[in-house]
Length: 113
Image (cartoon, rainbow, N blue to C red; front, top):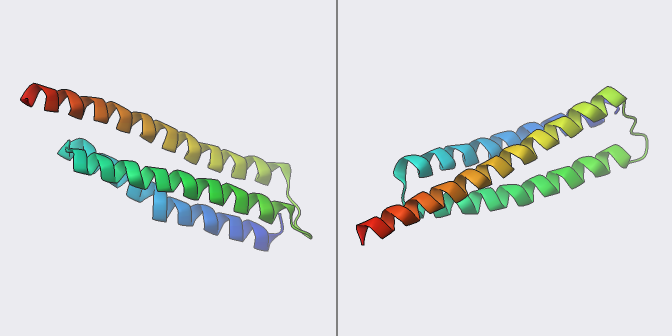
């Protein structure tokens, strides 16, 4: 990638991490600590929106890489693809964690009734 394109891609990745990934992780931690349906629902909604945002980020990066005058080295392509894959894996893991928490909360609610 040209330096300008690589800077743009790095900015997009950092922005996603700061605006979506970290806040989602905080909400998941809050949901696990609070163990309430409301906290769980908040974390689930934010995670769903984060997944949509990651799909948009992936498409944006793809368009940047394919645009005219954009060159990319194999190392840069691997790094960007790896960063996007790590974010996707993190969101998959978060989704599984939230599913486990939902089961725990449902079981706790059943015991209270």
